[in-house]
Image 1 (cartoon, rainbow, N blue to C red):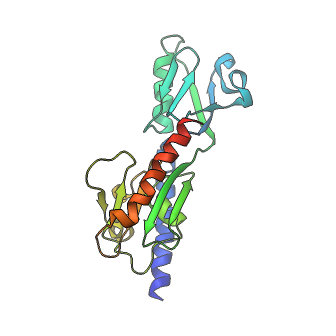
Image 2 (image 1 turned 30 degrees about the vertical axis):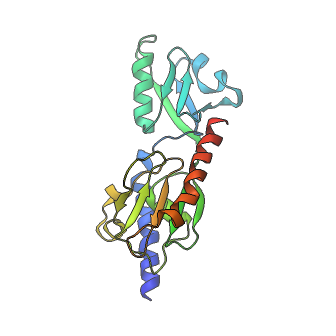
Image 3 (image 1 turned 90 degrees about the vertical axis):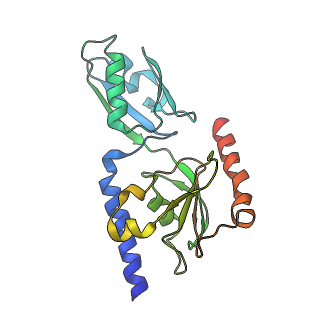
Amino acid sequence: MKKKIVSLLFACTLAISGIAHAEEYIMCPGDQLDITVLGHEDISTVITTPGGKYIVRPDGKLSFPLIGEVDITGLTIAQFTQILEQRLSEYLVEPKITVNIAQLGTTRVYVLGEVNKPGLYELTKSHKLLDAIGAANGFTKDAAKKKVFLIHKDQQGEPIKLNLNDILKKGDISQNHTLAEGDLLYLTSNGRIDFAKDIMPFISGAYMVSEINNND
């Protein structure tokens, strides 16, 4: 019964997190966008691009008429829209822009340790810590939920230590980190990471993911 309650709590937290952050979606490579500039169909999506979509490149940038490249790294749709309006205002009078995601890109991350299905996962819609754990079919009964470690692909030094209980029991969404391409999430049962055994075999794989993206 206790296991069922924990599983239900985890599922509900995932759902609440998804709703709470729907408007805060962080754009990522591979996102396909419908961009409409009111009264300027010549630079709107359907006219300007094959297939009718603007696509965020693997380097996290997008090319747009008149203003050139825009780096979308870390931006929400609202922030990206604001940047487009600001930069286009140098060429157009009070441009009105609508941006919608036609198709989400994917973020590939490793989820290892005390999860039911460790491995490499492609996250869509949302790229948060809870999404990654959910993709790995949840944590095991042996997981030390107070000792979850996040290792960014290019991170130097100690991994980031997170407390999953703070998210599940206290609703501390600040610890529900956004994951980037090639990141590694590790749930441990004893608080210690054996890098040689558990992590190093996957580090080279993470860099391979980066190389694959750069050559897309």
